Length: 521
Picture 1: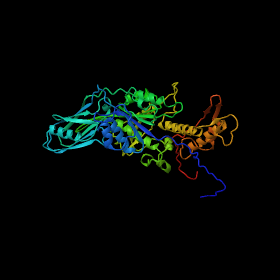
Picture 2: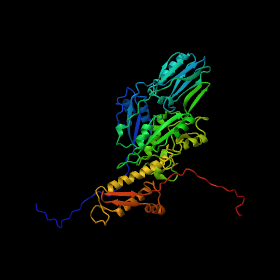
Picture 3: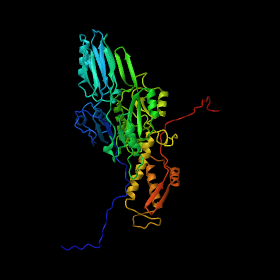
Picture 4: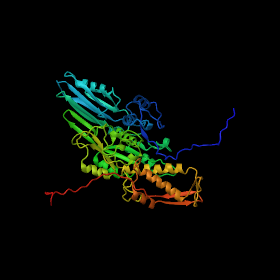
């Protein structure tokens, strides 16, 4: 068949000059598994799903790392979770606690025991008027062994011996509480005869993820943070890549020990959540536990899950942010890096009992030492996140420096840096470099064009989609005045120097109210 089609017309379709968004969030969990788990220790396990049974099968039900991931998944089912599981040290000592029942009683009641997590692992046993203390211990022990908590239980004559499933020091900060309701004459005691010891070696534990970026690492080993701090600090500014991130850990100890620990740390890549050990021994109630009765490494996991969800494009985060006049803040994305973390509701954490936790002065001192604190809201109906500080306090010359004091500052600067990085790499993927004029129709760059591209990216980062950098004519003028692009054609290098004014957070309001007695004078 002969077809006449004139004139010859060709219309080519090329890719849009779309800006390149930031890398999706990933969270890495490091912690101990149990022998029942199918995972191989010190091997990177990627793309862990949301199934409780699958997570328990991988790492062992009641294991440290299974608990970390399961609690994070309750908050965040969107972000990629990876893990490096560890076996217990062959010399590990397992923590034990003895719950003892003594006395005589003729009235029925209940015994309630909390094993680490008030929300997840509270068991309640019905006690009959004719039960002996040995029978009470057997009932409580049986109830404990029915749940996938971090402890197993063994009954004896009026005593329940609970033993941590994972060996090492981490279990020492997991709290236990026992309360008798009714059963007048029956008393309960709690002692810690064996302290957990000998954590796994952490040397080179992060080698499987060299070259991989994790914006958040959940790190339970608060007594040994050097491995993760060195790993992340070395990646904060590197050539030809963006690999920075933050490690989150929770430290439960005395107030003075927390202050000492915080003062000894100085890293923009580390967030330490502090809680205080509370010991209670009153009639029919005993407790040796953090003020917030949740497993400490699970607290770290919850904070990590919220942070990564906030920074995930389009994620529904309305339950984790307060947005009185900012509907856009109900959805995650890079813009949430500049929104304060303080006052974030932590619905999965139990409130602190009256008289426990830190005083206002202690919170301020912990803040100064680089320790983050969680606490009750004013009505004592829920727990909120306090100021999200890193342990960074001084620059390399030991001068006081607030540049990376807050996790928001790190998140904001990191988000802006990544956007510049991705878009400069994309825009100039295969470009000629010249000190002269640009030739139309040819892929070329000179200092003026590079500066113009940077200015456009600044405008993006100060707009509604990001709100990481300050907006407005004065801010843009400041950026342009401090933007310097120099070229070295011998090596094909463009050097860009720029100052970017960050959006920060409204942390303090000081108002003066003067009294007046007349509206006419």
